[in-house]
Length: 336
Image 1 (tube, one colour):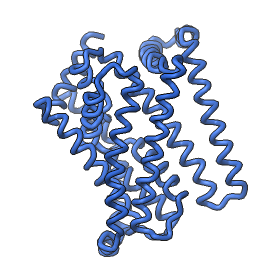
Image 2 (cartoon, helix red, strand yellow):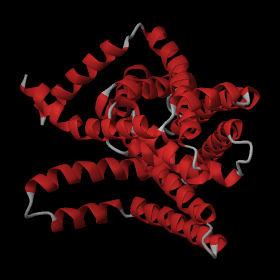
Image 3 (cartoon, rainbow, N blue to C red):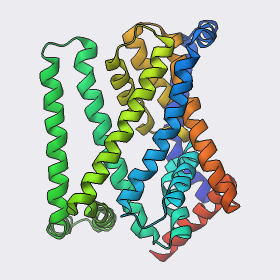
């Protein structure tokens, strides 16, 4: 019971955010208009977008396999990635990220602690890409003067960030020693922050191998490019007047919406971010929500198919994996 209360306190803020956004959607959206928009959509474009959503996940598995230095077989990485996204859709606290490290460790021979840092690095670079995409598109969307210059500045900032990550990867022990020295007065901060930084630097090891890093950057860029095309086609299916920059703006908004604390699967925050951003461009809340729900359906579809096949291959269920993760988490805490 005490564990339930602790978990309840952790997910309550996210639940409140999701509920508030759902209330706003119910207030502003005309569901009759939304259904008319869905019926009038260009389903040829939506069909292409759904195929691209599967290709996106296939390439995303290649991104992760590269970070794992090609140690696990690609098939295992693909199905485990799908399982992770499927778990994230239904389990709280983004347990799918822990889940895919846990599941892959059971089938690949790699250690959990060896896999988890790669997921952290993947998400960190995802955040950099989403920030760059959103900030680069924003000036074009709002019509700010000097939009091209701002886009270049954002690109330079991202490049500087990658260089800094490389420097940290090459000098990780120095950075760890500095952190321990500065945090010596706060043991709790030192304990948590130290393990966090060690995992972070372990994942950064990919940056010290030039060829491996270039491969990782290639697959990651390709993955985001596929997502951009898929989002643009989804938008174009509902808004024939859409420009390509809309795809950049909405993709960046969707990534940030998925990162906000919420109910499992970013329910509410994802729809709020996508529909809100599209409403700024179109002033059509109802059709904007139709686009958001289409993107939501595609997320469920690709992870459900690939992740579901993975779970069936292993004789697993969502509830079974959840119980294993809770037991694993409790075991880890008991050993600390």
